[in-house]
Image (cartoon, rainbow over all chains, first blue to last red; front, side, top):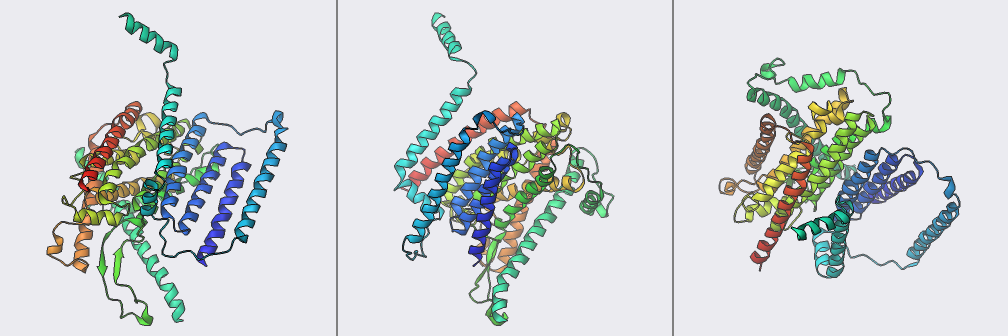
Length: 180
Length: 361
């Protein structure tokens, strides 16, 4: 009972925040609404007995990524976003894509309602930290390693992009070294 | 009637527990402020507050009434909603971790004397409100959300000093969160759990008793990062008064300022709880089981007092450092965090991994 009420409450908050994220013209308000989405999603995960995923959602998305987004918005002191008139013809494509997404969502609802229900094993501890860790480092080891390497590549790429000394100056330094 | 009582009973018990825990922590926090002013006074050769009540013991209440009664000024050009929200976010995120504090060991009780069979099935009273499978991550996650309070306060005040303070604090807290998280991994690996109670239990059963001995590097990194996370001297750049007036809370007055102030001290308390729980055995005192039985009331009381004394030591350390060290410069702070603290924390993780691997073979 309580879980059902909580689900509809949190789902409502999440949808409302997601709508506001798109609706606000001020980028900071959009970012704050997005944080609302993440936090209500995290509490939803908690009601589904998945505390690890819930806390990771808060720690990674609300606590790290969105702090960076808010930081950049504050640093650049972005003004209100004006509607871009010259891109008006893209509205149709946006509307079409939105309709396609909505149709997909309804199809998923339909498919879920059609599938026969089977009783979930109540003793399952699928959401616990131990079981997630065990699965990550046995069954899904290869994907975890691939993601790790990709993140490392992203970090190196970011460092390369913001390096102050350009390629030319590096070459000059190398030339100087060989001449010495 | 009986059914209603049975449903309501846990809610009543939890409400009382939450009230007690929050009141207790807030009282300790109020007296930390008085203690800070007294100890800073002694360090600087002054007396400290001594006018309100004997030895100044009523000073926190006098301060509270002053904060409530002062005029609340809202800057004209501020972003009102965000301006009002920021102190609430800061204090809420500071108070939420109290829920998982391990205040003491569980007490074995026999509650069968309660009417209507209310005490049925209750064999132990845990001295904590909620026991989370991911307690350590919960505290880290909630405190990392707390940075919004400061950042938004700085942005919404529409004041260049506030904005600089807010920017500095976001940059600082993101940077030091990494070192803090990495320094905890060693402890989590040794304990094999993210649950604060499991970590305390693991310390009682390890050879060294307290994880500060095998994890000394992690302890030092955590302590330094904790000072930065709570914006305290020598890392109090978000409110550096010599350059930024008062930093992110320049435009805040009266009760809104008091909320920020309280949030800072509650955060100090939280960080002290984390240091004590992760590295100093929490409420666990080695050898106490030889005197009292585990689960008895005297054992719980002595352990709880020990827990509080350890926390008071770290609160004192905060004040001591504040009276001793000068402030960092911002570029020093950043290069220290990224180029020294984080590599040391990651090195500690690697060494601990290797040692734990060979120990468990």
